[in-house]
Image (cartoon, rainbow, N blue to C red; front, side):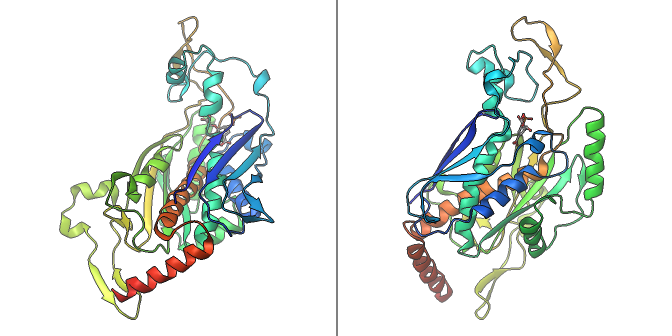
Length: 375
Ligand code: EPS
């Protein structure tokens, strides 16, 4: 069994659509939870005015009967309130850092509007809707995925909140995405950038907890869970790097200082580690510790104080197109990353435990957990 998903929709088109296939039968899909994830994606200091217009709500148009999955593909619709694609003006001055110029060359198109409408990160609302379905599936096995901001525009957060606190924030107050004592400094950095017509990027961290060991596989390159997580996160607009566990820091360390020594306690769930530098994955497989993944996001490419560009029609020097845009979306990208990671982890779960029905998955999961305790 394999979970697949695909999205369609333009930033100012009628609707965003996603289809997610391979979700087992018997899952009660709480639309309120999906909508809360969509709300979390829209939140965060530094968001643009579009977020004041939209009220992203998921409408599940296929795959459910009486609110419960029946094993068929699930289709989710999110309506755009700012639906105006047919009347929007053409664009000919590409923004450095955006898909504009490369996309116009690729499609041999002199109207960049046709490129940016689909390249816009608005599409990630659909990925979050699909991911939220997978979060509901993972919740059945006690697996939680959360994120927090590590850095914004050079300001580092002091430390990670305990997972319970992060979970409470994620569930109850989706508006607070910057979970840090330094959040005021981060907000000041965003305000400073905004006042000079500029933007900021940063780093976020995703943590997945309560995973069984054995998800993913070293037996084939495309079954390695770290590779699949990295691809899913790299594919979020603006992401320039992904690291797992100690990540790039290990480059300067000796092996004896990096690898997580193995311990055993029969009473307390068997094998365990006192450190987690590998970020919960060894050989492309979960080892039962938390998955810890960080990603760096570049500053948004749409600048109010635009960079130099070239008009693609006249070929004359010009300034890049100024569009309504966000100043910083690092917290939102963390939420998107949580959800695309949920899809990859749910995929590995259905692969390991069989994905036709939740009851079948549960039976296989429980038998496997009993078996590894006997190892
Ligand atoms: C986004 C909606 C967009 C932008 C942003 C993401 O709305 P609009 O273009 O109408 O202002 O705020 O798009 C980008 C970051 C981008 O690169 O295009 C959203 O819903 O997340």
